[in-house]
Image 1 (tube, rainbow, N blue to C red):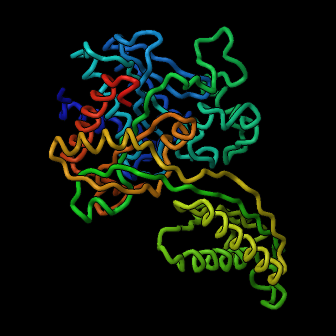
Image 2 (image 1 turned 90 degrees about the vertical axis):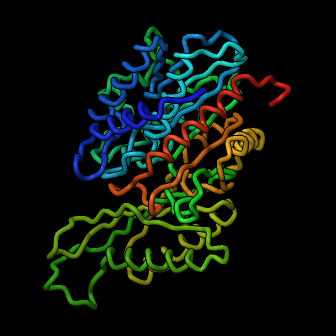
Image 3 (image 1 turned 180 degrees about the vertical axis):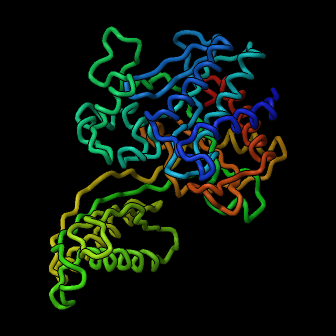
Amino acid sequence: MMIDGKRLLLNLAAFRRFSDTPGSGVTRFSYGSQDAKARRSIINRAKRIGCPVRIDAVGNIRIGLPSNQPGRPAIFCGSHIDTVRNGGWLDGIYGVCSALEVLETLAERGRKKATRNFETVIFAEEEGSNFGSTMTGSKFITGKYGNEDLERLTADNGKTMRQVLQEAGLEPETTAGSQLDPVPWDLSNVAAMLELHIEQGPVLDRAGIPIGIVDSIFGMRVVEVVLTGVGNHAGATPMSERHDPLSAAAECILAAESMVAADPNKRAVVTVGKLEVQPNCSNVIPETVRFSIEVRDSNNEKINRYMSEIIHDIREIALNRDVNCQIHEHSSSKPLHLDDGVREVIRQTAESSGISYRVMDSGAVHDACMIAEASVPTGMIFVPSIDGRSHVPEEDTKGEDLIRGTQLLMDVIETLLTQTEEEQ
C-alpha cells in the first residue's frame, strides 16, 4: 500500500508556521498557543477522514481508525509535536506526520485482513522544554509520573504543571464526568509501538545509508546543581576575597567534560545545556549559579559511575572555592534494548524493499523508551539528518529520505496489522 509522498511533505511544511520564533527555527512548547494551533490542525485532519480522537488529562492524543474493532490488540505509532527553543522543523513532528499519513492511507484504502487495530499516538511535553523533564507525557501514560508530579514539576515562570494544564483547558485533578481520558493508560492490549524519527546525529548521513533500525536507546541521568557564593561589586572586591559561584561552575563543567571525554569506548556523553546566573549583571560578582548536568550512555552502570564522580568533583571544587553547593536529582531513564521481534520485522521489510540500513543505537531518548519500559514490544526507525544537525534551525532531511522512511513505516505496519499472536 503506497503512501502519498507529496501529501506527507506538504503536511510537514505546514507545521513550520506553528512557531513562536518564525525565521529562527521552530519554537513550539507543549500547552502554548502554537502547540494549540498544531493540535487543532491534527484533530481537524483526523475528523475529516472520520477518525475518532481521544485526549487524556495531560494532553496526550490518540487517533484511531474508523474500522478499529473493540477488544482487538492495537498497533501504536507516533511521536511528539513540541520542540526545544529555536529548534528544528522535523524533530518529533516527522514521526507524527508519518503516523498520520499511515492512518490516512489506511482509512482511505482499508485493510480487510487486519487482525489488529491501528492508532496514531501524539505525546505531550517530550522535549521537557516547559518543566525540564523529558518524555513527561509518556511518563504519565505509563504511570512513572503521577499526581504528586503535577506539583513537583515547575516551569521557569514558577507555575506548576497542574497550573499550566488548567490554563490550557485540561483537567489534571480528575477526568470524572469529562471527555478526557485518565492517565495512566491501560497498555495491556497494545501489540506493538513504532516511532519514526530523524536520527539527530551524523552516522547515517556520513555513511550514505537511508535507514537506521534502532537496537538500543541510551539512558540518561540529570542533576541540578546550585552554587551560592557572595555577590559583590565587580571592581571593588579583590580577587583574593571573592567567593564566585560562576567561576566555580566553570571549573565544575570543565572537570565533567574532561572526565567523560576520556571514556575508553567514546560513547558516553556529558552536557550542561542550561545555566542561570543571578543577578546576571556585568558589573556584579554573581550570588547564585544554577545549572543542569546530564550523562548519557548505553550502560547504566557507567552512567551512574560517571555521575557519582562528577558530583564528587563538584563538591570538592565548591569546598575549595568556598561556595555553598546543593545538588538535586532531577530525572533519569535507563538504557533500553528494543524488541527483537519488531526489529526483525523492520529489517526483513527493508531487505525485501531493497533498502540499505544500519542497525544502530540512539543517543537521544524518545517516548518509545517509556512505552517499551511498560512491556510493549517497541521498534524505532531513523532517517538521516543532514550533517547530523538537530535541535537547531539548520535541522533538515532530504525529501526523498522522509518519504522513504514513511513508506517503510507503512509497510512494517501492514505486516504487524495482520500478524497473529503466534507469529509475533
